[in-house]
Amino acid sequence: MRLDGLEAFVAVVDAGSFSVAAERLGIARSMVSRRIADLEGRLGAQLLQRTTRRLSLTEAGRDFYDRASRILIDIDEAEQSVASGQAELRGRLRLTAPLSFGVRHLASALDEFAHQHPELILDIELDDRQINIVEEGFDLALRIGHLQDSTLVARSLAPIRMVVCASEEYLRKHGEPHHPDELSNHFGLVYGNTPEHQQWKLINDDGQEIVSHPVSRLRANNGDLLLRAAIDGLGIVVLPTFIGHEALASGTLRPILHGWHPQPATLHAVYASRRHLPARVRLLIEHLAKRFGENPYWDLTLPPKR
Image 1 (cartoon, rainbow, N blue to C red):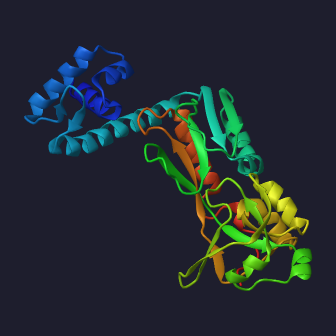
Image 2: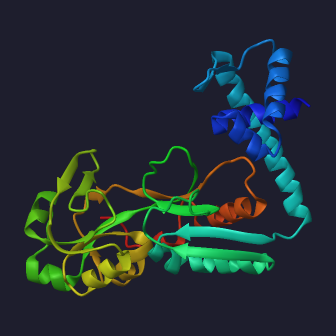
């Protein structure tokens, strides 16, 4: 009974509505109201302020919500941990991820996971656009960069390091820039899925930042296309190392602007809620975190920094 009250209270706060909370819990609205009233009576404190138009938490309610949420999460995780050890993972897992990362690195990681769990159905969509995972029904998204949607839960999987580079052919024809200010005299190959796609922010070891504006020769929404263009000598490019590591290791592309670095990013696993996270999703996140980690394998072959 005590857990029923906690669950009803957290559900109402999360939903912002008694009716929506009741629907999610699969019980009558009157039952939700009764459980919260019983909870407040037992605590001797008002947790929610109710008006005809809105709900809000009291000061006591805010503190209690944080603690109640943590308790319910711990219970869910404990149950899932036992259940996942007793039964084979089943069902469908819908995942979306960026195209180049999906093809280059996610595919082999998912193959390994699928072999470990043969009853699981993986439904994968590779797309560089920002998908609304709740509206489009995805269990999990892999996202690279700085997250903006604070309503989602994110777990860091790996650092994404960036490098400014060009081919020897391009550098022979156009010269090698040694300072970000010189990039305005060079052709740039620009990734188009960023708000400031014409701007490259570079930071030196002292923390100084310079925003550079190369002449945009090619703009594309796919990193592998930009990689190919850079190898063919069309311009200078800023690439994540998970795309450029092979070309950098072989010398096909060469890092430039030593002492200046693009701002790094992070690979995140993003999902809607910690509560009721299916075991199949939780175990896949753990698998990917172990597979990639703080020192991902694609960075191990990079040439040393100068």
